Amino acid sequence: MFESSENAIRYKWDPKTSTGYRLRFDAEGAAKGGHCCFHVEDWTCRTVTNEWPCEDLTEALEVLNHFFTVDIKQERERLSAWLPAGYAAA
Image 1 (cartoon, helix red, strand yellow):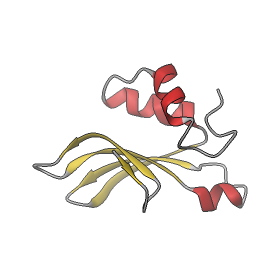
Image 2 (tube, one colour; image 1 turned 180 degrees about the vertical axis):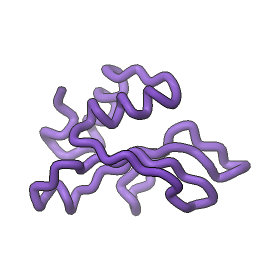
Image 3 (spheres, one colour; image 1 turned 90 degrees about the vertical axis):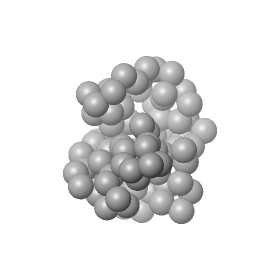
Image 4 (cartoon, one colour; image 1 turned 135 degrees about the vertical axis):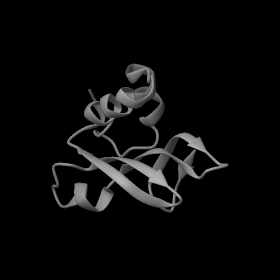
């Protein structure tokens, strides 16, 4: 599920407990030349309980793949419409 107000996509979200993982793209940081513009976040009760800053989409998808199975190639293609040009590249 995409959260446009937070520029994030939820993964493995459990609405009953409000827990899960999400991928957030820091567009402001990217515009300023930041190196870790992707953030994998572990959410519990609407609070970030852990965060993994990642330098690129591949690294972020590999972090998510550590927690549950993600088809990295397919997910990169799916996210290419969401991310600014150049950030979904391999």
